[in-house]
Image (cartoon, rainbow, N blue to C red; front, side):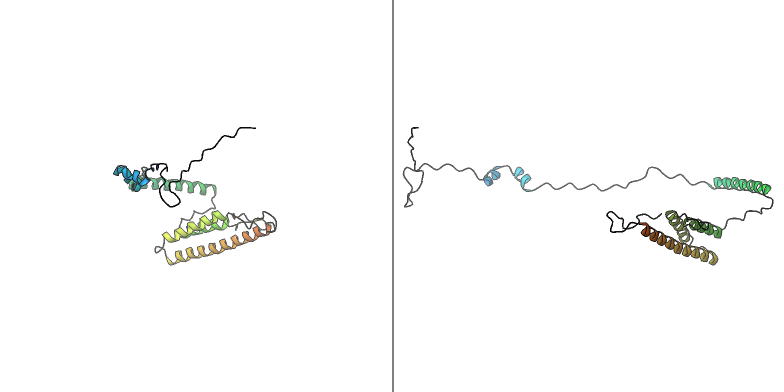
Length: 213
């Protein structure tokens, strides 16, 4: 059987039951300094660095981004005249060669503002599928048609207050017909895509066409 050592019990209470200090009470241990005191003992500059953060540096004002690549200078009046003279001479030779191969063909009519409008108008109609032969499926370029219509719209804006009444009416009529044709074709494409789409109850079925072209 292990030997049981004696335990010595020391009464470390500082006060008696009556509240008096015991004569054999151990001396009080010194207390550690408070954090405030240690901070107060530091130099003033260190306390300022702890209490007050340094102000953030102000962002530099953005500098204007200049493009170093300058546009080429416009041609001079002499260069324009020479280019126009060479162009007209080439056109005359081309017309002469065409008439020599096709004697029944008359001269090509000069380009006018009305013909410019009609050319852009016909290009948009072709892109909307207007040139399909009977019984064939129209080939539609909806994005190209939109750009062509926008081109005609810009032409109308830039030429405002500089057209004759006939030119103005022709331009506005062409824009109106193209806008209506564009809406009709896009609605037809949307209905066609909805009919070809799988039922919405099927998993992963798309809600509609993302791009119509």
